[in-house]
Length: 281
Ligand code: NAP
Image: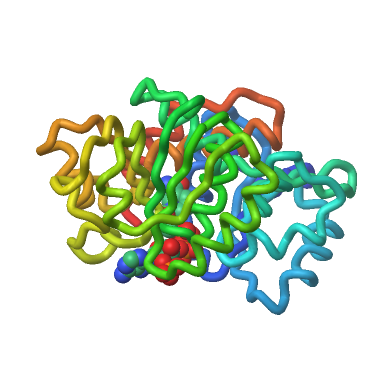
């Protein structure tokens, strides 16, 4: 990042509601500084009923690129000029590039998650995977893991209808993957290559979304919560000797993917990682 803001300074941002807690400004400004780029990253709180006006404004002001977070990841799609094929299948976008007035959207949450599985030496191809949860993050993970070749995906959610609506939507799009909505009992009785927690359980309370000791066999575990760094579920996994990761890799790699999508440059991972280590939400 150059020290002074000039007439040529490129502006990047994140839009969300709320957005104040976002890690993205810290991470991307550190990258601009490390690469001495004439660019800045800011956060804009955009209310749901003002999304259209905000996008018109971002385009008119020639903002170079932006991230999109909750609750706009799906509602932003009608405003885009182009969308990458996987983001279209997922039905959610978290990164947008402004290419001479055309807004191009992609989803780096899912590529970030799949890349984070690398630290478990895990590839989704031909694997049986179970997801806890059926919210926004689960939606991206179901589509992304199916697209990456998972043979079977079980979904368990507190509200069964939310899991079933994901199945109804994604089963025709990913016919090669067996998608099922299951009870906790069925999930616990199934041998799994990977279990992923996508619920918010464990973020604020010390609760765990399931009792791992009651599960048949789980080879790997991912909890996409990144704060706290070790949820009760991850602690249980450690005690049971199940290789596990938290959500910080997903967060880091979605940022790397966004930076590359905007600039065409390789992201300096170490700089981003350092910010993540020093970050308290
Ligand atoms: P969301 O759309 O609000 O979905 C929340 C999910 O949690 C739903 O399936 C909900 O079930 C379930 N849930 C909530 N409270 C529960 C409870 N007491 N018992 C059982 N299930 C419960 O949220 P999201 O955007 O998907 O985010 C989910 C989590 O992923 C958050 O912790 C977020 O921080 C994390 N995340 C991490 C990253 C990353 O980069 N690492 C990226 C995105 C999200 P119902 O359908 O029954 O309400």
